[in-house]
Image (cartoon, rainbow, N blue to C red; front, top):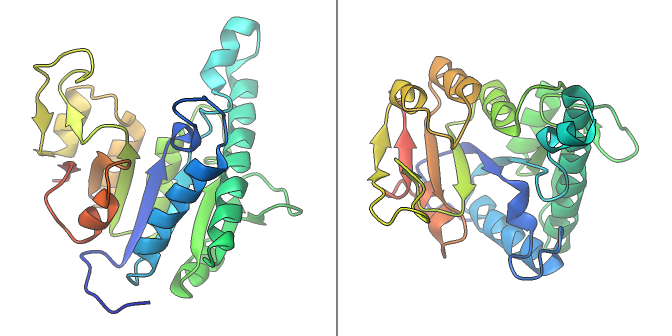
Length: 241
């Protein structure tokens, strides 16, 4: 690891399940795409940053989508949690292939494939330079993986919650559909909540506000953008008091 200074010592990176999806073939889990994600994470880890991740499961299954097929919201959410476990294990495999020691910790007990989430064990892994992937959300239905990310960031004492998306920050409306959409450079938690910005849910914003954890929303797919965020450059949208 290098001793190059960074703005943050410990971060939680939230990625959607679609991050692992091939945008052309729409393959749910694409090995080449996952490897590119792993290389970005490795580059940050090698800067001496302790990094934890929460990965969504939307590339495989979304809990809300099941209701129209007769699957209850609760049952669908549990199915979505299992999808996050699949993504977490795939990312772990890719990280370990490039020499990054990684642990998957699940909120749903499954000892054959993942460690149970135990806070002291998680922080110990991080302090030893291991990447920790938190799977299965909070372990409870009716909570999004954004809420899980905010919860885990609060528990491990992360300096920042970073949400990697397909756009370069938060806009007042969909920039793909509306060319005149305005990007916000900075927002307060209350502004994000009151304007009903859909990038994260209210529970996630509130948890970060209560625990004084800034949120940075940025374009994960832009070259070296994650490293720029780690260095404290003014990229993406920053949410704080």
